[in-house]
Length: 102
Image 1 (cartoon, rainbow, N blue to C red):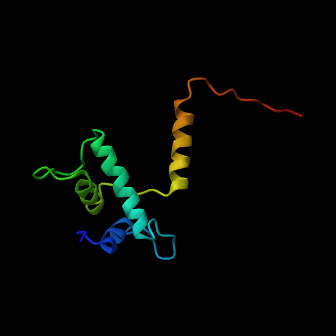
Image 2: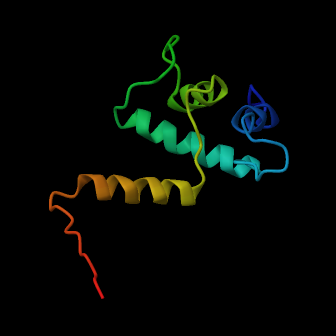
Image 3: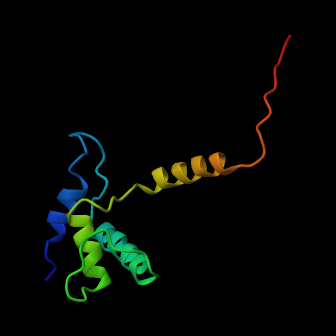
């Protein structure tokens, strides 16, 4: 059994969502996807954002990070917007301004 429970993790993720707004996570599937992606990052060498106890497994660390609020789940469209903004900021060529006159 997963501790904390899926419902507890969903509550943590959605805690900042105001009533009436769309929740960030609506299902256990989203929790599983997010924690598995984070576990793979830890396996690939990223440092955990929580204290490691006695050879904890990467998935356990990812769940602990999510439960402590150190791991944030973003909606897919928000991630695309952030990536696009980062791309625009990383461009090396200056953007030319065009003045249109009548």
